[in-house]
Amino acid sequence: MTTPRELQEHFDRTIEREQRIEPRDWMPDGYRKTLIRQIAQHAHSEIIGMQPEGKWITRAPSLRRKAILLAKVQDEAGHGLYLYSAAETLGADRGELTEMLLDGRQKYSSIFNYPTLSYADVGVIGWLVDGAAICNQVPLCRSSYGPYARAMIRICKEESFHQRQGYELLLTMMRGTPEQREAVQDAVNRWWWPSLMMFGPPDSESRHTARSMAWKIKRHTNDELRQRFVDMTVPQAEALGVTLPDPELRWNPERGHYDFGEPDWDEFRRVIAGDGPCNAERIAVRRAAHEEGAWVREAAVSYAAKQAERAGRGGAGVAA
Ligand code: BYC
Image 1 (cartoon, protein in one colour):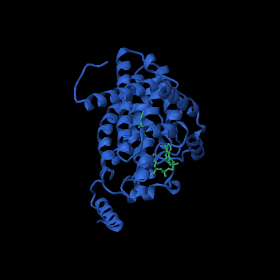
Image 2 (image 1 turned 180 degrees about the horizontal axis):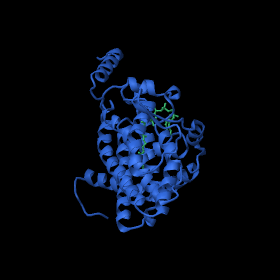
Image 3 (image 1 turned 30 degrees about the horizontal axis):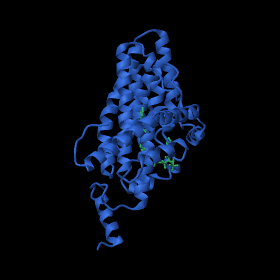
Image 4 (image 1 turned 45 degrees about the vertical axis):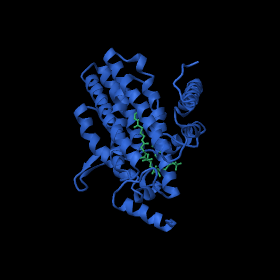
């Protein structure tokens, strides 16, 4: 008989040796809860994140742009599904997670509470939002929980395509008319600060980071990843010919990093508390989709019951 202490020691050793925790392994309650919170929030972000770009599918300027955008939004649905499946391996129920999203008990990324005002926003979401997502998610491929880490590998490959398509769209617009260049700059001005907020609150206010780093769920702090994103993005902005809207942004040779200004953390707190420009709309659309999809879930359950009944009778039979 294994004692609770031995179970804990085995868990600690697995983490220490950089091995993976798998669904059937014993894990502390806090570890399980933290993972469910983070993975569910991540899954919700992918699904809600389909909305801001999805609304541009019918207005894409060419068949090629429409095909690219459709593929990207479909990928996001896929990411949401892998992540809900990863949460289910921890004992979470997907229906309950959706309820928790709809009634505000679980969050989704702050970034998706901002509106997409022009087609340039589609490019800027690809470049900055997916760029930030990659910075944050590549280290999660080494997360200590096996199903989450493995889901992240595929997700990151697809995010790289998303980021490239955004950058390529912006390069095309920057080679276009003065109005197109203005639209790109306007979109960059609106999305820059919210993109920095995607990494979460400053380390000094991040209640989960220390614990999640000790468990190797997170591999870097919020501020470390934010800095990495800024360092990666500034040269890309220069190559593109856009200005990032931060007068404090400059290279610091002593630190070997770019210095940058402080995001408006009051705005961040308001947005994650439900009071951003699009929170109500995002949840209303998600709720309507959930209600309209009820018949699909009911049909799937009754089909599964029929299959089980038929298997129980031991024959393939002809469907009624
Ligand atoms: N937005 O202690 P902290 C995508 C919450 S989708 C909202 O630092 P943690 C894409 C946090 O939950 C990519 N809430 O937390 C899709 C906590 O609240 P509670 C989404 C935020 O977990 C479609 C509190 O603030 N990516 O790429 O250690 C189209 C304190 O924070 C945010 C992920 O989900 C935020 N930005 O660190 C295009 C990545 N930040 O629950 C693109 C996975 C913090 O205690 N998640 N909060 O009430 C993570 O890496 C971490 O959860 C975070 C936060 C870095 C985000």
